[in-house]
Amino acid sequence: MPGTKRVDRETPRSGATLHDVAREAGVSLATASRAINGSTRKVNDEYRRRVLDAAARLDYSPNLSAQAVARGATMTVALLVADIADPYFSGIAAGVVREADHEGLIVTMAATGRDAARELELVRTLRGQRPRVMILAGSRHTADREPALADELAAFEANGGRVAFVGGHDLPFRTVLVENADGADALARTLAGIGYRRFAAIAGDTGLTTSDDRLAGFGAGLAASGLALDPGRIVRSDFTRDGGYDGMRQLISAGLDDIDLVFAVNDVMAVGALSALREAGFEPGRDVAVAGFDDIPTVRDVTPTLTTVRIPLDEVGRRALRRALDGDAPDAAGAVPTEVVLRASTPPIIGH
Image 1 (cartoon, helix red, strand yellow):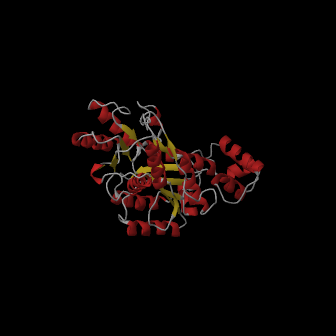
Image 2 (cartoon, rainbow, N blue to C red):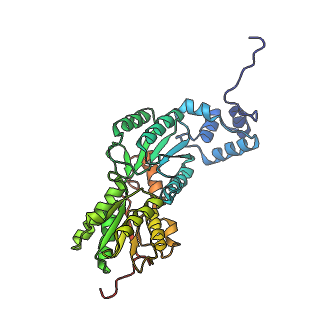
Image 3 (cartoon, one colour):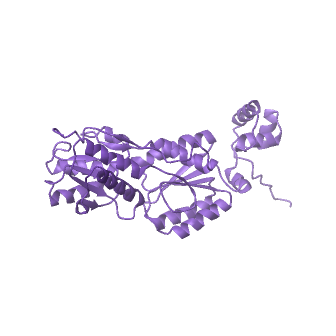
């Protein structure tokens, strides 16, 4: 029509088009498209270099919205974690980002706050943004909104998306498992082996899968050593640093005379517990020993350095993305192993 201007939806603000890039590089339009848009069809390395160099010279950048419509997905990975501030999740995120870089993907992250309704809302919103992959890494309460979540994720996969979980659940999706129970079992046996006999624990709310698995594993390890964890000495609190602080305050109020060691089911809770002990006039590691789980970097710098169970968090994140992209690839399957790390917060008991 006269007076109307045709809008080229593939033309970026620089004015250069994909046709211009192909002509500049001396390749076909199809080859230029595959080189820039990350097609699964392999492009000769020399052609790819020529296309990318030409795109840089012409200041060309692809129209990501148009690509998403054409492909049914963007080049993004959506990572859902419980708490962005928790070093456990930042460690996993680092592994996801590292692997995504190898695939030419970009990672976006959102926090669920361990709220099942919030998690479901985020998944629904993210579906509309068409990521290639969704990774759900937040520890969750068992059975919370699982049917609705399963339906949303199944619909996402039916439209070409990929899903992966970190940690145990009952949903039919690819999963990277961590040896939470086995790691806590090994920790309990190790602590019993260096002389500890009287235990308390600070755990998350009942039904929080990660917390429950670690607490159960710790109890099993003590039982195998002829010991027991008194249910009356298990404090439930938030799965955070402040939760660990509050949990230790409760134990202090009830009296610590019958406790050699307090097991906090994650490291950030253990750090909070150490602070509560010091504020109450106790010396952690001498008056009461403390152990955690995860081996986040912080615990090597606190005083005393924290005994814990090491999880290779970067590897967990890497495997999660590989599980999503490759399915049952051998290098991604199987539980991620853990390792007990003894430090100054649990010195051997003299005379054992």
